[in-house]
Length: 478
Image 1 (cartoon, rainbow, N blue to C red):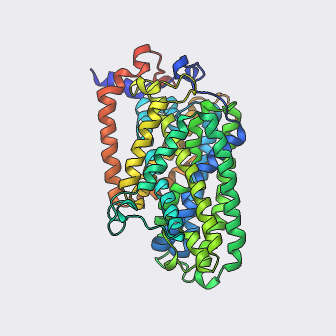
Image 2 (image 1 turned 135 degrees about the horizontal axis):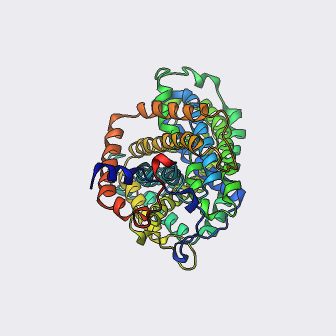
Image 3 (image 1 turned 60 degrees about the horizontal axis):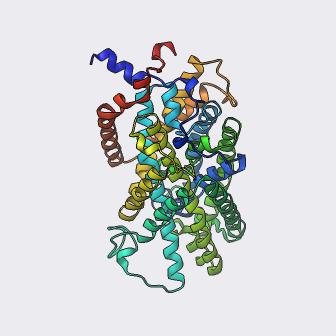
């Protein structure tokens, strides 16, 4: 094969005209999600371990009370990316989210790159959140004096005698079972669970504000002002989730209208709650005393409110499970979309004949997340998730600029303001946050991408539907 032919394969684009074409009956997804169910899935994906686990862990060992600034920095970067996602969601309401956006605007290799990236990142997010759920579950067991063997209480290296986090494994497998029941069941569960979660966060804020000791905010930068950037790179994982929600586009009753609104609504709700909750957490306890695994429960216990601590632990379990659900939903839909396009074996794109969900990939993802959650430390997994999502944000931000120039007249339900300033801000913040991550994270990410390139050049480029049908758009004509 000549270099020109290879270049043509890598840069071929999925035609916009094919986006609305119906899928075969055994590859179709059921449409049942309305605006508020989509928003609930988005909020469910954003609010979870970020408040209940990661905020405490970062405040304790990375930033101190200035974790609030870390959340704000991450929120600005996420908001810029969210506007880009919103514009794309109104144009391309298809399963796959950033993978599909990259495919139609930047070409097949770029789409593959981001899709392969998201397969690992979303599974890792589900795993790290499951570990957070497990931390609160162990807190509850301690409250009722249930003593279980150390080997099942955490991954090796996370505590004396720890071998595997059994509870995190069970949460991942249970979530896969729920997803396999159908999108209507998922939507109902998310709506109820998110309502409980938001009510719980409001309860934390209202009660906790009366126990704030301003002296706990001093020193505000115990690890140095620069630490807020490292903190932002770590907690960034807590301020996205709308991107995973956008992978459910084909299961929305009106994706073009509902998805842009749901993306913006979910991020706005989440950021207000994050700011208030972190202010309360770091005000109730000295940062050195905040629990890295069950921050709010131990904070309320420390001020003589053990009953509230138990309620928080129970609510946190319910709330964090919605994050596991959202991201496992996201990764299965990305995998489904890539398989339907022929970049992965089409066997994975087959849906259940009655429930119309991709049950094959759902259980594969559930088992993969369970293995990761059971055997890895939460910090390692969290850092791994962030670099991949930040890369996805960069690709989407670049793609929205490209599509504005190449398809200026394409109908858009939502147009992001201040083009190209907003996407450039998203790109800049994302690059800086990536730079703040440890070098070990870069190594793990590079290994995964090299494996992905081997799969692409060994399988995907020759099995792509665009290769078989010859319907690709040529890059220089787009």
